[in-house]
Length: 184
Image (cartoon, rainbow, N blue to C red):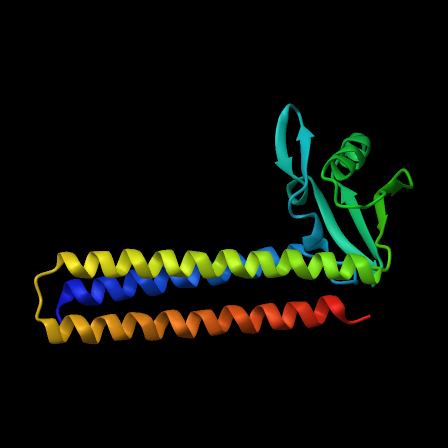
């Protein structure tokens, strides 16, 4: 196999790996009943005029399965952190004790679990669309090369095998996340 073909396959694998990593990151932000500091990964705080990720201005942790604690490095940030959490519209109601911000993560209702499962399904579908776009791009690059028909057919088959493998991985990740969400 020549270098150009190997390059196309390597870049396809790299793009597919990035799609899987992105999906895993998105799944970590979808709550599944127990408290997890990753739920707050999208929250940004106004820190001296700049929007800064919450994790860069405070320590995040969990006290138990239903409580997230946020220990800001500067106490005057407590009201800003509370405001940012409310503004992020995550469904949390933060409270503070003068030292830290505490979030009680309520138990999920059956209706909310179904909504979250739909969100997870949507993210999985976006990942599959991304893999199909990567396949289309790789096939397009392959057509540009001047190689034999036999080699082209073999490489197309290899590309399809890669896409099938990654699609199955996406399905497995979704099934695992759905099970985690729906478990009471």
